Length: 281
Image 1 (cartoon, one colour):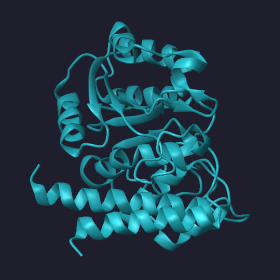
Image 2 (cartoon, helix red, strand yellow):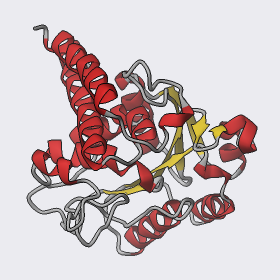
Image 3 (cartoon, one colour):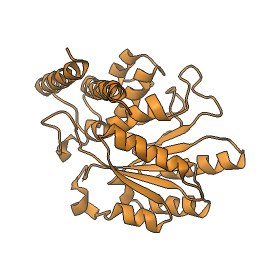
């Protein structure tokens, strides 16, 4: 990837983060921390990786994306809006009564959402079903699912992994956002999932560990996953919860709360400065 491509993707990731802060602040609730940590992956998926069409979100042969950690809907919504699935200004209706952008993704109301999620552990199972169905129907598409590192404490996740390996779902890519924090604190203290890569390998996955904020590493891992045959792939991405907002970074308290007025101004000031730097202004 050349420097200009990285620059453009970095600008988009910054805008995704701005959308996360703006939407959760408008809602006075939501989950910014884990949305921010996955901003680069959301950006790369929707602007480079996924074969999707915003003008035809139900296109049968599109790639599928399942946000298994459904509480990070603000990040997904922000990426979808920037990609053109719905107006960016609608992000400010997040969690409002009557809004189609509720706290967790709803496939029946949100253009571009392939599965309703929110109950942790279940999204990967639906992704497995999509991948197997695509094989039965001989569809040339790929299925991606994003999980949290706290989410993989759920037993159903590992049942799904066993299923994916058994059925040789090489059209499935499981992504784990390893930011090290969950609602109750450090994942290693709540219920350690480590070593994540070795466990996934033991369940029959081809595994890559990357820096989830590095677009070159994201691209290399996703490209490598497409070459794997006869087994599912997994990407464990090391990330920073609350990335790019100084007072949010590596703070478990920002898992599920919105900014107050002063925090909002500070967060947006930092992100606007980052955006200006990236745009060379």
